[in-house]
Length: 431
Image 1 (cartoon, rainbow, N blue to C red):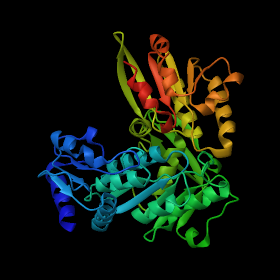
Image 2: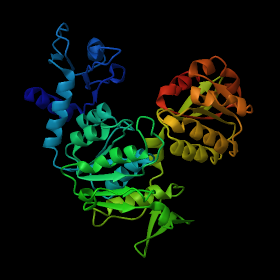
Image 3: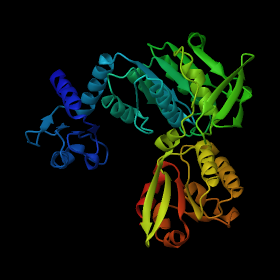
Image 4: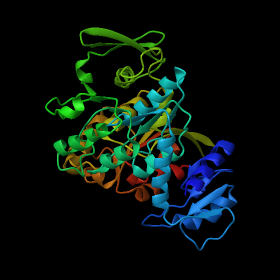
């Protein structure tokens, strides 16, 4: 198996190849790995990957015979061993970021800051933060980088144990712990206990944790290496000049950093600064929050043509929490564009808090300047009788049947919700 690992690295170095599990995304000189799931056997797409230009495909189906198809006994075992091989080979420092809200934007921000301080840095793909997503990002990492930044996400007990065991980060950051994904945890205490396992890395040098609820304390074995901050107590002030000046007070000392023009989310800037200060002695405090990180991490802007007019779609269809949704929809509401339409998907994994959060979101949305709002998902649909000024649909399939009337109006469309709502299929139908 070591020979296959070396062959992959040689191929990546020669062609700048990307390792992919989805044959539809394959480009010339990429590498395909056929993984199995409950619904499909990825090995069946190996031939398609080869036809599209993959240098070779790795599968565990010995019935496939081709000079560019490599057979192994177990794909999952192969991925596990290959990621372990790469991490052992990597000489740089690994950064892990998790939290209930803001982890993707913070990851992107830290990536931009390090690179702009001439510290060659790799970061994980978008919000690929479960075990398979982490493995995917590790397999595609630049092993010559000085730092590698990974996002970790959990929605069930023991998941952080697995992620931390795989990655063994040198530096870890928890952006916050909220009850926005408490559904699969018994209570907040159980959620808290699982989140802080990001600090259980045997290689941990230093960590930082933003926690608002000060009743919960870290175990003594962790507090020796982990600093705790409560951003709500830092008295963060923002003033607009050529840059956004962000001033905050910590340990009786005022600090000042700057974000790029138009930058927002001052908490992200401050948290990034405090975290990097733990292990980078000197770096520029200019442009400390990079506005482009919002686009890279929190969605894409897609242009669609409908009846000879351009519709701009602000695509955040792959993930949402009550906090991120409120933040992003407020950002969209303040954009100086016309004919705005919001398509909001419900949020999963809220457990007993589901109704409370969805009611609160509707009330928040009522205060927006945007008045054309579509709600999709059973969690919102159950609340329709109390909010008759909005349109509610049980699923994306119900909405697609009638969405043309909104396309006649909408020119700028914001789409956000949990991935399970399949809002990406709504976007596919905007044409």
